[in-house]
Every structure is written in C-alpha cells, then in structure tokens.
Length: 136
Image (cartoon, helix red, strand yellow):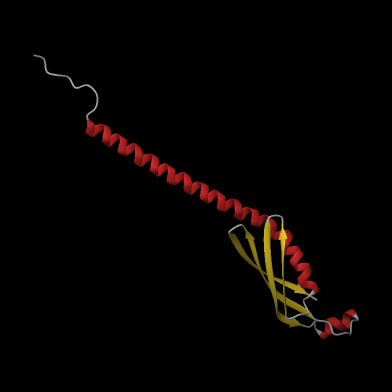
C-alpha cells in the first residue's frame, strides 16, 4: 500500500491561523481608532488656533478701553469657538519728565501693562493662552 497523503490543514493549523488573523485585525482596529482620535483632536486644536489672532485683537481693543481699571473680564463667541478672558493690571508707569517736557505735554500721562488670560473652548476641547497688553 501506498502511504496516505495529507490533504488540507489540520485543526490546529486552522485555529492558529484564525487566531493570528484575529489578533492582526484587532491591532489594526486599535491603530485606526487611535489615528481617528488624534485626527479629531488635531482638527479641534487647529479650529481653535485659527480664531486666536482675531479674538486677541477684539480682546486687546476692550482691554485698552478698560486699562485704567484694576481688572476686567469678558466672554464671546467667534464662529464655533467660545472664549472667556480676564485681565489684570500688573504695572502702572509714567513717561519720563524729560519726554513729557520735550513733547509739550504737561498733563498726568500714564501707561498700563495688563496681563490677559484667555480660554478658548470648542466642544470638549479647551486651550488657554496668555498675553500682555500695553495701553495708555
């Protein structure tokens, strides 16, 4: 008699191949999920970053109008992004007497250095920024 030739795979080989396939699919799913989450966070961060410059200009205008106050605050919405800001005066200064004399100004001139804290919110994402504003 001739020895019997093996045809097909054994049960152990099929189970091992299925297990490897399952692990590969699970890992790729986790990688894909991570990429989607990262992409979503980056998109929200970019959406917030786009409005920082125009909102900063709006806030600067308001801070200059209230720079004589010890502190001020406000909030608003720019597109889809909500923002809140708070300012506090950190320094009051005077021009030098020589500068005032040379310019012909004899009134009580002052300048103010103001620290501004801004929080932007888009959905569940928030970003905090700080800047200083000089006003007179």
